[in-house]
Length: 414
Image (cartoon, rainbow, N blue to C red; front, top):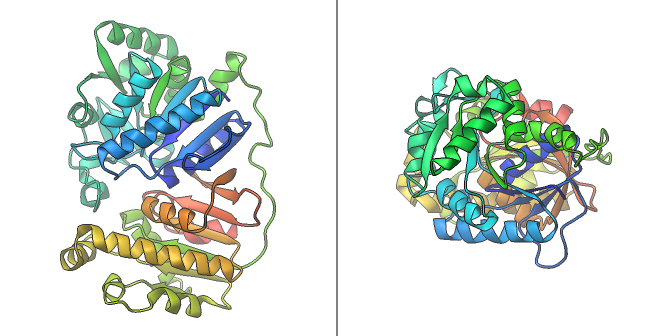
């Protein structure tokens, strides 16, 4: 193993795994830390945690344990993967986890690179943009769990860590890997612990990957991983495998489960509904009243080739539900219901399952008792098809913010 990845949610884990496979790394995704056994034989192993919105001390404990398991399996570099929209709160969890991993790896400095230009996430002068809008003016401002009201990543990260945070400005990044490495070395000598890197193009990600491939720890979204394969190959650590993304063929019904309430997923649900395709809405108020919503959804879905079962709602509707049921209870009810639905669908013969939303994906994966995924071809940047190890079941775990309006149809037609 060359790279050990600690991912803070399930969709983020498949996102970075898809980048690594595309770069020619044989990649295995482990759902959580295995209770027994050694790390699988692969160039990169990704551990998918559900720590993004966990209490900070829990997130730190789980992330450190994941890295220790990866290190015991031979990983020479640690990659802490978080969302390209830097989903966190003033209390964490990105800063506390990164602090702990700096200590574990013995690193004095690491990079913070949330940029994913292919999906419109760029950083300039330390500010994170979503498309042509500041993060704080995007739909992430209304996220029910991690509302992002400040686009300045230097300032956001500094509020979460005791270590010094600085920016590697675009003029340095655009000058290439040698200039970036020199700047990182200078910042390290000044006592800086976190270097937020301006990035506005995929070519610049490749230069950042080259400059940071020898660091004990890197942190960021999935974009930085896209350049690591070439950087490792230049060091003689890797021979890229062109067949890294091959999966077995499967046949059978398909379903989409959507728990995300992001603007992107709302648009994807609307597109499906406007096309007149079969859909079943999960009502959290009915769940709270004890109605058999999951059983009703399963009965409705039987015999249909491709269905959407969704709890996705507008920001106003989400706020109203949280006010009625409580901030956490609404989400917990929906996750539990969609997990029950996933179990029933697979028992009924569904073999392709698209899941929208990080929290929902975590609940579904655990409900299906999945321990390991093989990473396959990319549907859209950041979202690959995966196959459950040893089973004829394909999963696509989609971050709420990813994909075009026709993503659900695009995935099932892939």
